Length: 323
Image (tube, rainbow, N blue to C red; front, side):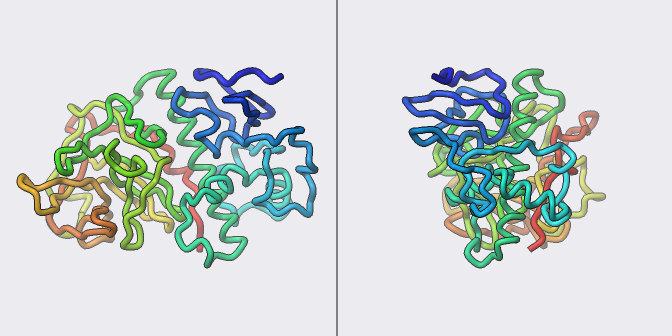
């Protein structure tokens, strides 16, 4: 019988655990946390059917999204590449060996599935590849944060559902509920948004004029005394900002996104919502009321003078789709 799953444990390839009377096999190696049990993290663990998982998982005729366990380890150098930059031999190896499994598991659950039905199979693989590499990098960064403590003024860490970790950076408020700064993968990009235990799934981002609810996301934690909100009107000009902006994410074409905060709504006092802004946008965009709202007067999260340091992140490694 496999050992029972435990938090605070490093699980590597070939790990098998028992949890809540079910057996799970590893998909993504990771350092386990109490709020990431196997039944709530399909990108990290695959449930094993009774009788084992030895059902020809390496069958070359099996569709890439049909694998239930990962049989191949993804080298670090390959994770830094876009799907389209991998050679055909590597692609086939990852398809047959379950190397796309973590992303496929989340896609199957409806994650990052914007216009998914309109994509070609190769585009779906590219999104799956990018999604699982984001999960891998985010989980690794989160494990390092919990193990070594904060190494910068602010850090992006992975969370799930309505679990708001201590030290989360406040980004605003809505009808008396605190909103925190969050971001999540969507269609090849990493999009800043908001999180709260009051929201339906835990986090919300705005994308393609829609408000998207998500339960797997990153939240910004750190020292609020080392950051500040800087007022901006109209288009963002980085060189004119009173401070270095905190990196927020990227569009799927590589455009850098920053963290915005803008007033919106009919309540008194007026509510404030975190969202996104870039130098290519004529104002900030916040997710609100099922859509995105453009606001001309907003604030951008920046480091305070003397604390201008790179956010603990891996943007240089973000894999984005090219569809």
